[in-house]
Image (cartoon, rainbow, N blue to C red; front, side, top):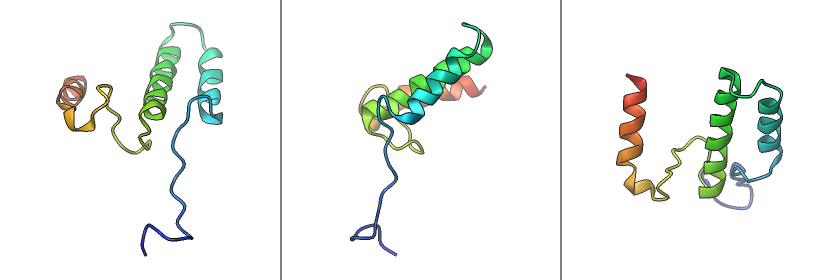
Length: 83
């Protein structure tokens, strides 16, 4: 099976203001501000917005630097968080 042609429909990319972003915001706003749940949802919302701003599918790394080839700092920070 190929990933092109008239029957191929790629996964939709995240978009600012879309239904999922609105849902995440609503979930965050239902929590007490600065609780651990609120901070977790806020971080997820930031990550979703980064994916939307960079046009990156959700199953791929979105680099804050804007250049996926220059993610050394991103991966280094993620490794430190996992320790």
